[in-house]
Length: 112
Length: 121
Image (cartoon, rainbow over all chains, first blue to last red; front, side, top):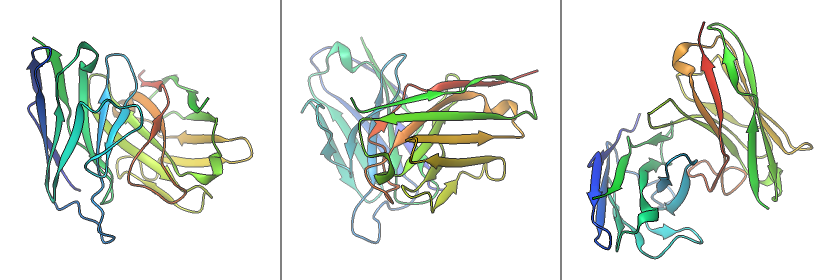
């Protein structure tokens, strides 16, 4: 199975500052069709997950442009610019290139 | 409104069975592959199973293969997960999730609110 490793585990951030979450895969996530199926999900406290980013850098409708995804191959980053209180929660990366589908362990974003 | 509503969770003894349902609305259900993802208490997300839009293809995580069966009734716009031989480690919130296409298995663009399954004597 492809192992998705996120860091850090916990990320205290000052309101208005930026935050970066790393996600590394144990194998390349480039699929035979040329796409890289790396997703980012946000799970706010007490809520179900919500997709933020798909195929590395494509932002979902309604997701603030403060969220951006980047990376390639096995190394990916989610950046939150100008963190707001509503950004508190756990962020998961997920790969959709290889079976079985696998998630990272999550990064908890909290306000300092 | 586009939404997914899970039901059927509850307390079940080890070795028992349970069937979860996920009622979909607001989109053409048969056009999209659907999946189950679970989250043990205080833990991360784990993909469980997925079924194509036409129900011709199904896939399972090794941890549930042979014990869980995913199915769908497109006429009722409902997804199911039949769980048997349940173990304590199956205790989790079970989420229903939609994919962007009939045979797309790479991402989930809509999630339900989840239903809790507790396996305990």
